[in-house]
Length: 331
Image (spheres, rainbow, N blue to C red):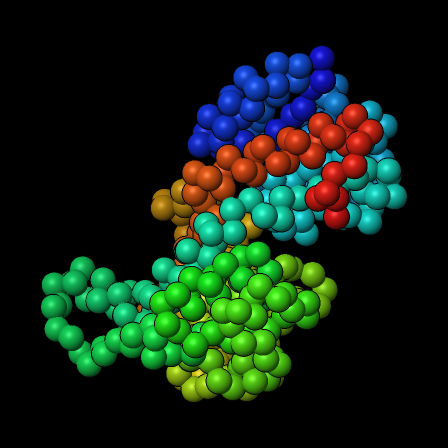
């Protein structure tokens, strides 16, 4: 019987794993809460396939990936859209295919980004903070209605395109920038150059993959091109923003407020209860101290449908590759 081991399994994933197991009695699914690293490589022994989900890099050198191959593995499947935790080139050199889940539920992230846009426009973060201290005044925090603002979306793939459609239906003016324009998005948004988007947008939402060209895509030079007092949402990957440059832009009043669902340095922190510990990471610590930063722990994807899709698609891909078939999600 084929055996597949899932790493970093959370309790909320178990129902989807159980359902998949019941639908595939010829496959045995094993789970562990451990992440995959060189010091946990023994967890990957004796199985036909592995599926991971983690924010910290796997690590290891060429010999680590070769060890996985020598153990009989043909693939590494991540049940996430991002795959930067895996050194794909080293994996491929060891004859290991790498797959991801590029479209588990575009609406999950798009709806979350829309919610954060509304929270920033309506100053709910400020009012929540005031009310918690029994301050019921308005303090001039006048909101803006969604149809009165221009929203720029950087990255109009499945998620960004879905967000564009939601915003269009609400009457917002939507600008998009993407290196690969799609006809269907052009019906609900206007494609413009990046400088045009930066100069015209009251709100910008980021929806790009993390790669060499998108790392620190938003840097000091880019922030200098934005409208004063703009609002920013990042529901993609933390390193897309040069965070110190963001803080400088906030100090200069270029960025009035930001909603960060992902941030540089989140790897050792997010998805953990650290309420009894002191946060030492300087970037995250400063985000927590700034009243105009709305920080959430990388939960934009976290819906019932998305969790089910991530399990199912990752396991489907793993089984296909183990059987010598192709996967449409090989990276």
